[in-house]
Length: 280
Image (cartoon, rainbow, N blue to C red; front, side):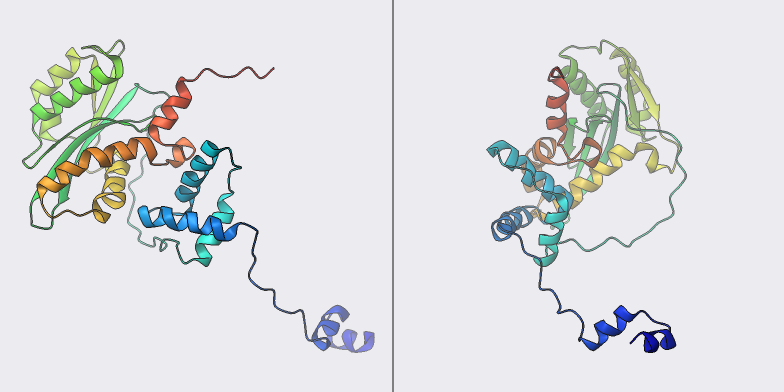
């Protein structure tokens, strides 16, 4: 055997393996409790068909922590979703990205609020337009306005006031807060700028044709359309307007964010408000 292996220039162990027929193929890996866990995963994916395995893992572990059970590793969820054909199709689309060297995300809440608008098309041809404000640290939608008409400066000013009242319970912010938006006429209007100064907001505008400069708002637009509007009935504008409060509340309470360590915005806020435990 050694002479043959040396002549062929291969290892003797390889020849022995070939002669013995090789190892038997191993069956599909299975752990105890996989069937019950896969059933729980199916319930979540049926309710949230646009969620990938990481967000499904976050929702599973949130429920398991509430019941006192041990958390599940995301690799196990990935394996079960692969076996159950529940994974999302990989995204292969690419578009040229403009270089963006700034930082939109704030290090603490109530330092920078970002605002933008979006359109939701209904099946009958009607359009619902939504304008919102989001905190670039905790990602909570602080306030929003919806209409079947255009987004006006008055709507933006009402949005500003609602944000200050809800975050500070006052008519003026106790410290300057940046208000980041694009160059739309509703945001750049003189009345809007003066109103922002009166509320202690500091208007900031993104460069033209640079949506990456308002990336937190752009991410919420994508989330609302993909995870809510696309999978919910939209026969007319009235139906969408009736569903919007539930969509946004579900986003604030339940939607996991990778930047928040797979916690929802309000879950992150509650964790931040809790006093740190003593390590001793």
